[in-house]
Length: 207
Image (cartoon, rainbow, N blue to C red):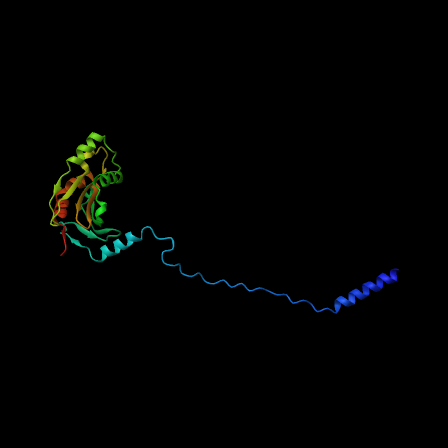
């Protein structure tokens, strides 16, 4: 019986040795490069793209001009700034910029509150703030539109030395809003106020 089992094992072994090994098959997977999405499809876009285009266009050819005050040095500008000036020494040092934005950027109350935050000026009570806003002065400009002047020194007591302050002007034109902003300590704003107003008055639209 053992011999019989051994004989069967030998036969099976010889049978398997005579078979040809099966070929291994592989399936090739081809990954095509991503095709451009069709027009109108949803894609991620740069939320600030329109701002970059507006800055580039403004830098290429400003649509307004101005007369620089005597003694004010024009320095390199960036972003939305059309120009930047610096003047003064010690506590009279100030910086002044001219910016052009779209016509929808001229909300007066919103801009005043934003500027107050930039110089860390606490919001006064409603009665004082309302009085301040109603009594803002204006000055004529060569652009044919008046400029609204916002002098934040009127809301400050200047208990701290070199406390930052600001004076701004807003000119609302048909196709743009012009912002002129002077920053520095309270003494600097007082010292350069008249020259700042002269700069604002000199702004005109190029023909």
